[in-house]
Image (cartoon, rainbow, N blue to C red; front, side):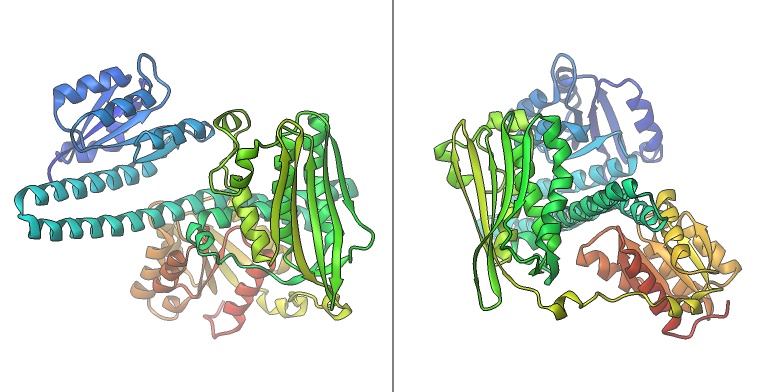
Length: 544
């Protein structure tokens, strides 16, 4: 492989030393050549003097010429290269501007050097594919040329799909891992008999975290949203309880802005219907949160009324009314489109991705409902949606979800579990959750797959709970080594995968690696215990 030239544009003086240390082996082997510039103007001079560049990593905020200006200049130049912007998560507006100016990808600060390496490799591969296409076009005649271009495009599509899946898997891991800690520790606090005033806030944290997790899952699984395959539950839900959660979640925010905030439920509305409480809460919090964000004075009202009732089905109407900035008449019909806000000034002043109303519309329509908006610019807006709900019977209300049988958990006492995860907080949540349900179980911990493999070689375990993304040796490789390198019965030790990804590709990788089952993070405590019980009590296991 020919030497690849990477240009790093950043005014941080220590970055050059860190990068040269990270990639010193590839530099010594002649695989990589790094060049460094302190601003965009210096970077253009380097490109002019030094010849072709394969990949450019540029900061956004720099003196003399910033990264956005550099991107504009690069688009005017000939040559095949790809630029990646480097900025903080909080600078998403500039990142969006950079992507619009032709940036190929972005990474965030503080820089994760594993992420930097993966992005660099992906960028170089993309440049290679493009250059291969150019060479094919120059060398071949029209017929062969068209075939080669088709092949290049096919490879680009495959590469793009692979990178998209990897990006979503990585983002899923990065977002869902801290969510696992938040939800897990909240569940543990709720089981430790909190005081009444603490219970109120802990429940609000739990409900908000659960709702946030649903949103994260939807955004990360973009193909599912586009295909309209969002899963909906049909379980007993209390309309008044959902509305109360909206009140709890948003009252403090409205009071901070000095707004009057009202949440009302008409007396005729049935208390319990059959539907998806998390999705309903998601739509209401989204619409009401928007109303508060775009209202500087006055009132925000969230109301639920009974529009009609027939044959054990009621049509409930929800209205979110505000006295905020309103929507221009020519923009009203487009507010539910993806990435759309009333104006560029709205985005700059209030923030947001423009996805919220699109997702809300899809969720309402998946309920079999309709959503609409009326607005007067400068005076306020009313977002309304109507959903038909079956009215819950007494049997529905008494239909409890599957519960853990405490008596059956006694058989788990004395079992030995190896918990493998590089995140110490995740290990605390998992271990404390298991101990809260099962007395007398022994839990040992390992921080990566290599350490886990060494521990299993030394002594037998009844179960291994294995995170999949870890340094040194990940969970996939560790499981393959357990199955292939160890003698029975250790090679047959059940392995429960713990993955932060909800993508089917990741689940398939778990099973292909020899894992027996999987659970996604953040996990539901009951689901974790059910999986442990199934794996430990359902099949013959090695002796403790």
